[in-house]
Image (cartoon, rainbow, N blue to C red; front, top):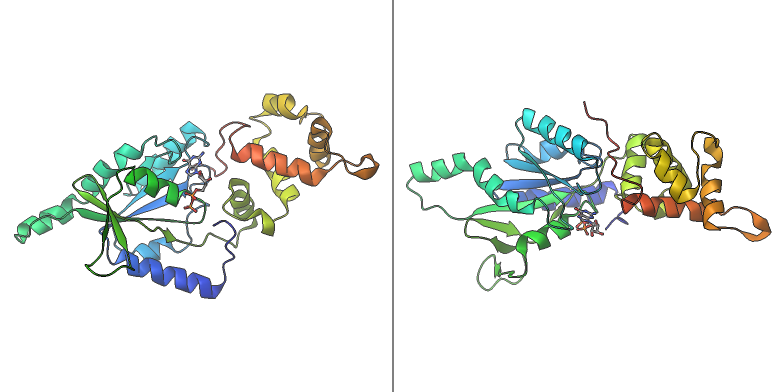
Length: 282
Ligand code: GDP
């Protein structure tokens, strides 16, 4: 998924698909990456969602700084958007989603009751930029007892609904939205967290950015893991230090900085350097 290259045509198609699916649901579960809760939001999300009720899910919270995640969640809530911290990989926090959906849709329930309508299960869909954990979350929510029912009898294509308990149905395909492109720092953050394919970025540049972003909070970790003393070694030689420690050498004894960069990226994304939030809280 992270290999997607976004062009205007793709963006228009993705947007139309999301809008068509949104018309079928009562609420959107907007997934963001807890390490970059602002940078990982689609730039047009407010316009796309319009008045549609939503809940923001700060996913991959296991990799983000816990206090920062709480701050971001509170910041969203203070703007009237319910927000929860989740980890779709382990399932942490996922149980709180269905009750939060119910709570967010109380007004809708009241409207149905006022009109004498029999309540049906609420319908929701997951959406977010590539690699943010949409499929993982759908699988987590659906669980093993995945009961898939066709949208209409006799129709095999089209949306499939997954029952989450008695009161909630989830569209089994997520809405895929394009990330922000314009701001180069946002691009670096999205590369660092894996939302943008390594094929289209300069991995050495991204790895250097990561090391710089975490240097003050990870001095000991970087020393232990890479024998890198960020206080003494000049920044331009950080990747050389990593390559030296790991024995990444090219012919002629030149340090393989590319391989070192890939190592740093992998370690960061796996949480081996610690839990970091790259966006600033307000
Ligand atoms: P999608 O492209 O949005 O559907 O993202 P995926 O569900 O395919 O997830 C992308 C990658 O992130 C996969 O390697 C998942 O295992 C991983 N992932 C998803 N959610 C979490 C999470 O909460 N924590 C961690 N550590 N990894 C996650």
